[in-house]
Structure formats: structure tokens, C-alpha cells
Length: 508
Image (cartoon, rainbow, N blue to C red; front, side, top):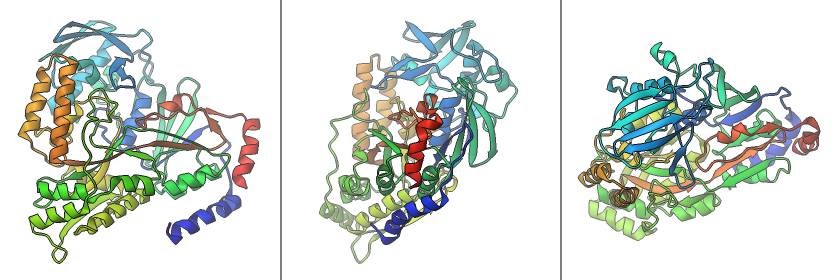
């Protein structure tokens, strides 16, 4: 541990004791590493926006533990291989402007996303929908251009009100949904206020980019909850505080290194293979992440119904990595030089520094560049990178492979940010479209993941564990494996007599 980090952890108790404070209102405050960027679910792609939108809106379909589709606000019947009938539950709910959600809203939402001129990034996953027809106020027929036994799993769009879609309402900044929370205000870019509809409890989502400052604010009572984006040292320190509740569970969010395949260096498969053998991922998990992750070989976790648990890991072999680089023409005297982009989060920078060190050991000189989230994500979407690291969060359906790796899925209509082109993967994706059983689809997705594992447009790193920390004011929060904030539906404020002893413990 560096002296700066050690001195900081030694300083924390003194700082908290001297400055301890708390807010006394009835709101619950959650600290975020980054603010949501867009609360219009037709366009939102960043993780924070997606998680907030899950609180504001409802969807037709949910998922079980194996990521199979189950009814959410609608159930369905398959009338024929290309004809599905969805019926809304009578309890589907009302939008926050008091209109009841009905079939018109479902149809308007899906038609908007399917209209190519609207350029929604969600369109590609729904392209097989040929038509939508209103049967009655609660019933919608979906006609497909081709059969797909997994079709219900694609219907995860957050449903918007048809009347406001027609009025071109600004959902990005003033969302109107029918979910368990409603929009209250967004007074500044780093502070979003929602109201839990069941009890009118106010929730504040406060951006605090620096993780140490987030922890300080938690301990001082300025915020009540944190989730993820906390370094192992800070987690360890929080665990030593008797009044702070720490929860952790296995996660499914997939962290990876992305390559620009149009770059002359990272576009060379030998270079990507050398990087794969140069990284000791398990050592990073054990010694840097303190075990708060599990090694990944594919985008989908192995327990997913379409996962690929049989993929063999790229072994840590720095000598093999060096030989591969020599074959390409690089030596210690004339090393390969690459630029690695990451966010400005200190923990992400630290992980990138460890990766930089391991690559240097085999003869790759890496220049690290960190940026604020907006600049960083903009560069990645624009293909302005050689190497970068990001995570996919909340992935449930294997159609993600078309969205991320299809040769026609370039931004902004897809997420093929590395400009990967594989005729083999494209062919397998087309075969998935004609597969008439989930078993056949699963087999094809296994083959797709095997090809991706060989080509390395992504280098899989790990599935990060989910971690939350809360102070004595709140209880009842439940972590989700995908990192979503669904547990906020149950979290509650403790009564004053429940918190007094714990607050004294924190202050001292």
C-alpha cells in the first residue's frame, strides 16, 4: 500500500470525528461515481442512466436467475412461430402524470424505437418485429419477420406514455414513467431527485466522483448509501466500522479490454494474443481486487442459459507473449507503444496501472490516458482509441452479440466500437435467426463465443462482485447480481432510537 493511501486511511477517523455531521430530513441519499447522462430510455446507453431508468419505468418482460424471460407487466402466448400476443396485467400501473399504461403506450414506444429515422441505439435488437397491432386496451399482437423462440426476451424497452411521445416530450431531462419511482427534479447535473411512489419518500442521487470523498460523506452522514466503485482498501476500512453495513455478492457485470481492430497495431491478432498471455488476471483479482471478482472468458457468465463455461482461459505466459511480439517485429530495444484509455476514477486508474506494468514486462510500453466519463465514453463510441477498458452491465439476452460484434452494428446504431468484422460470426448470427429452438440457439451462441475467444476483439477480464455500503440511517437494501438499483424499492429509514448507538460508533 502506498504511503499516500496509508496516510489517507489513518487520517479518515480524525477527519470524521472532527467534522461528523448528518442530514436530518427524510430523504435517502445515494452516492454515485457518475451521474446519469440521459433519462430517455430510447437513447440511454450508460450504466447509471439504465439503472435509474429501471426505477422510473416498467417493462413487458423480466428475467429469472438463468436469464430466461418471465412476465413483468405482461404475459404472452405464442400463437404461431411468428405471432405473439402480449396481454398487460390489470395492475400494470399509471404513469406519473396519472394516465394508465395501456396497449397504445406499448405500441408507441416500440414503433418509435423501430423507426430508423429516430436513430435509437435500441433498434437493432428489435429489427425482427414486422408489425404491432392493438387487439384491445390491454392486448398487443407482435408479428415477426422470422421465427425466434427467444423473442419475448427482447421486449425489455421501458414503456413511455404515448401522448407525450406524440408531443415530443423531453424525456431525457424530465422523465415520465410508470415505475416504482417518479421524477422530482434535477436541479444540477450532479444531483437527481426521485420520489418512491409507494410512500412518497424522497431519494437523492448525488454524484461524488472521488471514491474516498464518497466514503467520507457516507461516514459523516452526508450520504446514506454507496454501491460499487469503491477500492478494496476503502471497503476494508468500512468493514472495520461497526455501524457501517457492507454487503457483497457475485456479480454478472463483465469487464474487458477493448481493441480497435482498424488500428495497425491492435488490429494485429498476434498483438492481441500477446496481451492476453501477458496479463495475470487471477493475480490482479486476488491481490489488487482482494478477491472481489471472478475471472471471465466470455461476455455472458457461465450460469447464463447461453453461457460458455467450457472455454479455456488464456494462461498467464509472459515468455510466450514476448515471443509473439518478437514475431511481429518488436523487441525490448524497439518496443510496441500503445495508448490505453480509461475513466478518471482512481480505482480504474489503479487497475490500468497494474495492467500497464504487466504489459511493460513483456515489452509493451503503454501510455495511460484518463478522462472524465463523458469525454472517455465519447472517444470509445467514436472509435478514438487503441486500448480501453469498460464493463457491460445488466446483460440478460444473448442478442448482445449482434449488437456488439455484428459487422453492421457500428455506432450509433450498434456497439461494435472496435470495428470487428468476422464473416464466421456474422454467419453464425444469421443462423441464430433461423434457429427454431432455444437448444439450437444455445449451441450457436456457444460457437459464437468460441470464435470471439479466438479472435479477441475483446479480452475478457472478470465479472466484478457487487458491493454496497450503508450508514446507520437506512436498512433493508438488497443487492442485485447485475448492479441495478431495484433494492431501493425496499430500503427504509430506521427510527431514531434504532440509529443513535450506531451513529455514536461512526462518530468515534
